[in-house]
Image (cartoon, rainbow, N blue to C red; front, side):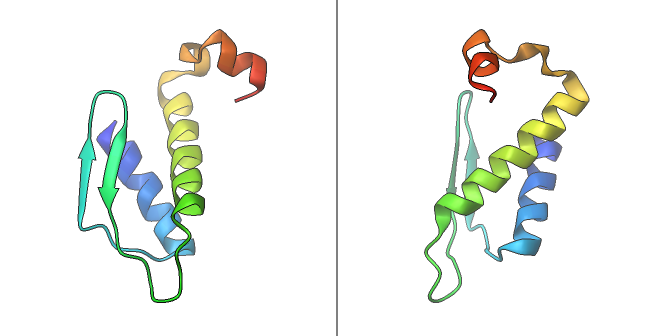
Length: 76
């Protein structure tokens, strides 16, 4: 699963450059320390793309049946 996350981060990094000084993978979330290029403060877009790319890869690898009923209802 860590490789799926690393792949998602690298994919997003190609389109939206950033460095990661540290990342912490916990049981229910991820934290990271990452400086952005000068004049760019758009962390939210990067997180969104990382999460989208990760979940698509996760579903492809493990199946999408693990989504909760609420997530399926919302189309997430």
